[in-house]
Length: 440
Image: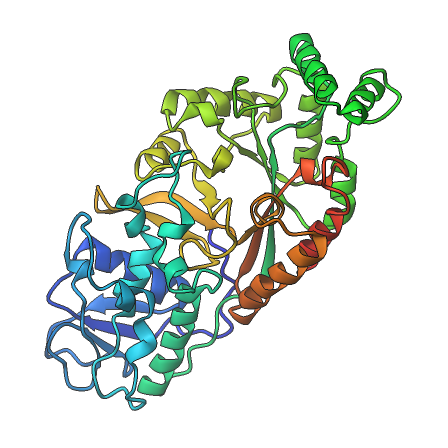
């Protein structure tokens, strides 16, 4: 589901004529996304003599067509596969060269620029980090100082305004600001429900490290004298109010980076079912150990579906660990339709240059897929663990991201963890951050 509001006016009769010698799948993909999904316009390809279409003609070729907006292609949409590029600056800053306000000269190739970011072209070429992920420092948006700006959304809005100016038509804005809340449940309990050997090992580790406070907390929770700090789901519901969140649940086997309790735990299952009954979306959080293997992902998805008794169609990778195209293909094969890993663990901002969901284009297959990618802009762990911010700083910096989303009438999507509301291990008062994000 793409989050675009109903159009404010009926502009379905506006037909954009596209003059282009190339009509490959990349161009079709980006025209469908920009013109149809984002601007509410229809289009068709036309011959050089066809100039009808309510005055909106786009010439996407080396040579201009009289009466048409001329966009000179960079060549990206006519190619196949991926290769190192020398036009990165033009793909990251396509509007830098606009000097002709009358639009009588060639317009920058915003179609290629948008495709470059939505397809995640650069992620196919960059080296992976120690978790097998694309590093934000490899991003051209990071290198150009644009990571915290939804550049694709800015470009589309400017393109809409320029089309109005060029054609004399009124093209109303088609989206509204919204908050898209996501909660990752990596460890539903801090102490409860874990195997006796895990309990003993954790207790011994804390005792040997001199963390007597942790030892006492563990004993109080396990003896029933205190509630488990990670079991703060009632507090979450109070903060969310009427807002419905997507809960990403990890049910994979125990491992070095997979620390949740056994999915057969009745208290765990009760929490999941209650969240579902309260109208929240239950989604899969594939384990680190699944490593994009479709059989592993399918096994975990089946476990989660057996608990809530309904299909699971949303997913976000644990540690945001995914590879293109392997992980997305595996998710599609498992019946996942909505993927929510498009963001960074160690930096805030817009990984794909947009705050809006978009269909995934498989660059190796050169085809649009059935998977919708839902980007997020901020994460609690990013601010605390990697950017070393306190509560006040996290609220201030994230407010700048929220302002960017509001300026573009775009969704503000965030990632939070139940551990972050535990009130211990350094997470004191982070409920203020969650409240701030939910209120937009």
